[in-house]
Image 1 (tube, one colour):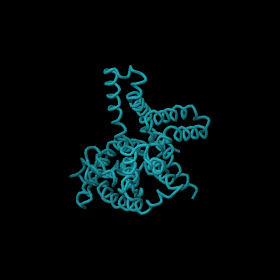
Image 2: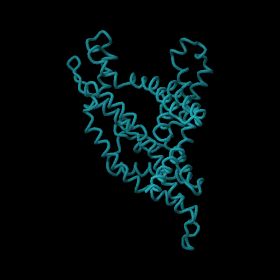
Image 3: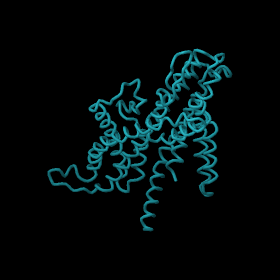
Image 4: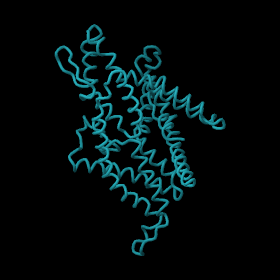
Length: 348
């Protein structure tokens, strides 16, 4: 029993370390992205006119576009990082197979959605957890998709890197079999995931009445929102509260508005601060929107980073300090919290 526990713990630690590589890439690039975004804001241009220079604006906007490609493909980075870290044999082939597996997973889920008639229109795709991934409209399962592809490729690499086939098929044996078998395995996985995703989405909808419960509703909402980030379901949760009855129904000047965001837009942009609804509704409505997100990026994330640093082993503190500080600056400057969140969720 002791050996099994030790083996399980070792596997978890190896898995956590395998995510260090993609997270190490996300942190500094995210910081550059955040700085470029912050310096390009209109209020910064008003305060420091130099940022209004056309050449400097072009450089900042170009850098922001270039760095965004990394954050748009976090699952792919996770797939490669997990495969490289978890595979004991043929790590390079495992990384290649993980990319094959991740591409296959997305297109299989897309085919499933099309064939079952559940592929959403592009403008409402986010509300049901769908989106465009590498040009494919599919389920946006975010980091989880990359982790599944990476783990599958790593296990296949360790199991089949010496596979021997009959002479007629010998060319496809050994290392060459790894991406082929990974491709084949991702087909049933890609067909199973949408079934569970639909169940999870329905579950979120069924408990959505909790999110507007006085005093505790928004706390539960944000706790669940952060927990769902690695799985991509935070988009579904946000859409449920913002656009459906789960976010409440509000009667404003005789007109019914469904969802947090619709009511907020009416009060904020049409009625204004002089309206009686401003004091009645805005404190509650805005507690589910960007204001609470800014509390997270400006205060909660640095607090989490400090806690991680203070509880780290003394021998690791010099390394931890650099990584955590970069992750916190990325969140503080660019509202990009994923590097630190993935660190404390996955790395032990």
